[in-house]
Every structure is written in structure tokens, then in C-alpha cells.
Amino acid sequence: MALHETPEHHLNKIRHWRNRPERDLSLGFMQDDFKRDVQKPFKQLAQMAEVWATLVPAQLQQRTRLESLSRGVLRVVVDSSSSLYELDRLMRQGLQRDIIVAHKGPAVRKIQLRVGPVLPREED
Image (cartoon, rainbow, N blue to C red; front, top):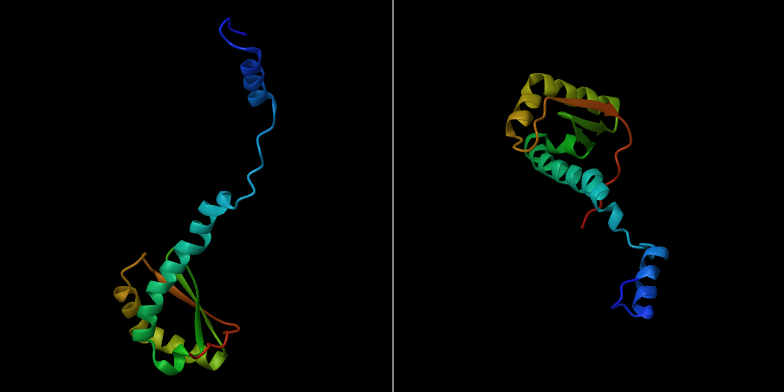
């Protein structure tokens, strides 16, 4: 304890060191994870959705769902094998190249198609 310190000031200083800090009950620690896992992929898919809507025929758009865009691979879910066949045929005829060229966001190298559940779209 310094000569000019009062005992109360010294005790307050020791309390600061000895007591545990208050728990942070906010969700601030998740901010970086949210940006990495939700916000950035959503922005990438939003840009791709615009390109998808302009280049893919309307009857196939309703039967597809863009799932993810990661490491240059766009993953698309199609509702049935017949829709998968039609979309795959269009991709091989040049649709994949057109989508890759038209997309101005992160680089897309290939498009993977798979059959799976496509959630119904809500009409406003």
C-alpha cells in the first residue's frame, strides 16, 4: 500500500483483482460465427439466386432449391429424378457455363445437382 492511498482505496483496488468479473450474458460472442456461417453464405446465394432466376426456365425454377455455395461448388436440390434429368441435360448443353459467366460474386467452378426435398414457396 502506497503512503498516499487510503485504506478504502486500497481495498477497492484489491477487490477489482480478487473478485470474479460479471458474466457476459449477451450473445456478442456469436457475432463472428454468425457472419461466417449465416450472413456471408446468404449474400452469396442471394446473388446466385438472381442469376438462377434469369437463366433457368420457370418450370424448373419452381422444382429446385439452391442449397449452398462453397469452395466454388454450387449445390442445387431438385424435387424429382425427372426434373434432375431435364436440368442436367440443360447444364450439359451450356447452361452451366452461362451461369458461371453471368455470376459476378465468388468464383463458381461447377454445379452439383441432387434429388431431395424442395420446400414449397409462399406466395404473397
